Image (cartoon, rainbow, N blue to C red; front, side, top):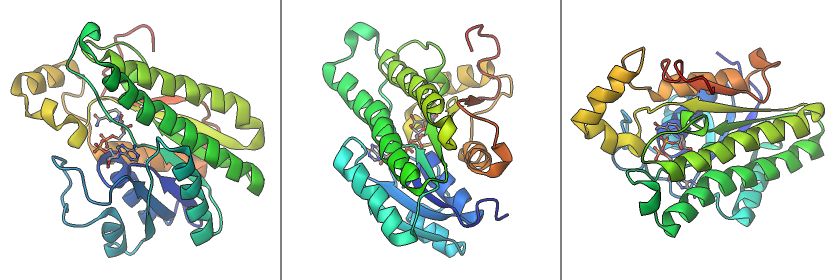
Length: 265
Ligand SMILES: NC(=O)c1ccc[n+]([C@@H]2O[C@H](COP(=O)([O-])OP(=O)(O)OC[C@H]3O[C@@H](n4cnc5c(N)ncnc54)[C@H](O)[C@@H]3O)[C@@H](O)[C@H]2O)c1
């Protein structure tokens, strides 16, 4: 415990799913957490055990410290205000987790619409870009380094059928992670990406409920199970902590071995 004592963390898309799990895990390790999302209520269809509590309420119930700040990550001005709100409340910023993301799948490339493409790129790419930009400005002003964690995906490391829009957005996020790491390492700003395979959140509920998909997916994974929010949250704690101080620019897979048989990753 207390691996993040004294640190201030902003987490986007933190009302549900991975973001919520990461926010709770960070708070349990002593971080002061800014929970941010487009809405404070949980997304329907998730697997949370206590969906009647907002993320801030859940953290406070466990004895942690957190505030909620509304922010649509596709709007740069709102992201700027989010970082300002964190600094106004807690005095500094140490960590940003660019987690907010959406999924568009289930179609072949020629069937996707411009709206699908814009929606996915706006949240997954522009949102991560703005989060990194605004956090870096604050880190440079403080002059003591910083930590950026991007929620990418194994979809950012290779191809999958029927989700070219999502995969290209995640591929861009993966390359952004590399660029940021190269640019800001000398300033002590560490940057890494987390690459889960399918894990149980509202985002994958439809796939989880499809019994044929569920069976085929589990068979394709060497560990024979779906990812859990806690698998991702504990990796985020490690990457945010000083225990990972020489891990930089990495895209860390948390995928039960999904990608082992692919050459490209
Ligand atoms: N669940 C998976 O299997 C999986 C696998 C790999 C990567 N990911 C990535 O993990 C991240 C979190 O996904 P999740 O599974 O927890 O999904 P989720 O739907 O449970 O949570 C996503 C959260 O992001 C918020 N959000 C959406 N648009 C936003 C915006 N414009 N601004 C701010 N917040 C916004 C939603 O309100 C929601 O609370 C995403 O980037 C996703 O692509 C998920």
